[in-house]
Length: 362
Image 1: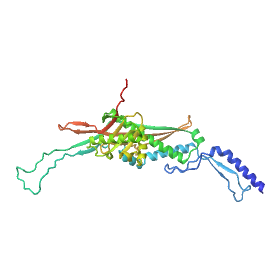
Image 2 (image 1 turned 60 degrees about the vertical axis):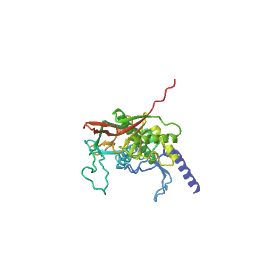
Image 3 (image 1 turned 45 degrees about the vertical axis):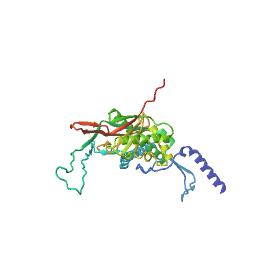
Image 4 (image 1 turned 90 degrees about the vertical axis):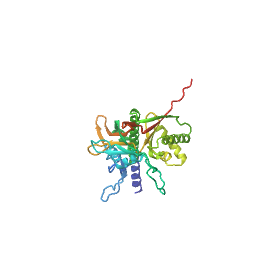
């Protein structure tokens, strides 16, 4: 009996060793946000003794019942659910005003009133005659209209998922979650980068050249906060404090500001600067101060009501799945108002703090 038991244990160990390579990075997992119930490449478990069986079981059972298509479908569904989730729009609104407008409609312009002060001071205990009563010259404020920029951005993000890579490397719930998180970061950073291009090329900014901060992260962060505070004080009509603005920062500065936030004992860059922060990729063009009440993003939606349609296409000749995420966004940042003669004039709402060119040495 002992010999038979030892033989069975040895056979199980040998089978486990043979299948170890294909199961060591695979697991049965469920991605709760994707709507797909199960994602698994392979699983291994001992066959339990079954009543009435001849040999009583005891072998190792290896199953591979879901392949690369399940991961591709879960990835596409996760991106669709994440980008079109109301919480995604709410998170954008924490940084900058955003709307998803109905199909075939125009962006909603921003109408803000700049009030003229017609107040007058008087003494309520005095009796005023007609000739010495308090008077004031009535002035009227103006409506500031902020409309969409001339250009819009039609963005497209895609990825190829090869069957060979997915079925040999394996995948888990955690790896899918990380892939979705990284994709969302890339989409948002790309949108910010295109917005920066539109602001500069559309001449929608007031450019101010400043010295680029240098030194330790803490010193650079302090210099950036000082620069932003000075810029806010020069245009109080659009916001009295930094909390009334959203700052676009280059990706290279985010790590420096994040380190300064750690040194300051605060939770992230937004808490350090006391305002919304969005990073942009590409060339470092400085800092952009966007007044939150005067600027917005407007996303076009499809006939189905999705702002970010996601498509999944099979490329048989490559043995791969292609996942595409598309969308179109208008930037509401072109402001106009009437001057004293009743003529429409453009108002530069957004301040660009551009770095000065370093002095050339002879």
